[in-house]
Image 1: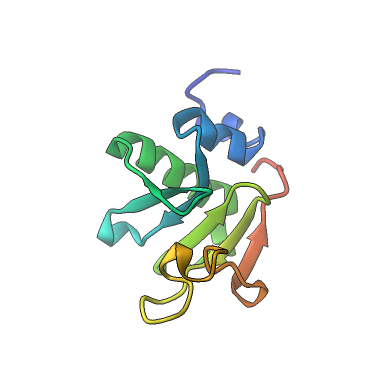
Image 2: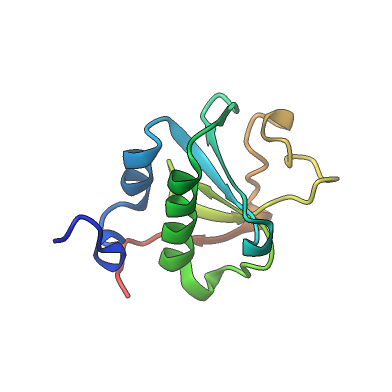
Length: 120
């Protein structure tokens, strides 16, 4: 399998692929493309500051893996330990700031999909 083949790489565990560029990552917050921002957080709620290439790689990989499951015009959170994709709380909602509730704001009501490891 080629190292840079994004389609082939989604067959592996999505969390493992992201940890190749961000070893301490626990949550990836993907904002809409027009905002051009991706935040990666550690499990202790601190943001990792990585180069933009690593952030873009993680965002592309998640968008491609989940496809139509998410409305990518809105922000989403991908939680690596469980492989779950959540709709990000709005800035005025509890959980938008990851440490607000010590759970990254990951409530079942916001869960959109769980990565099942299948390839398109």
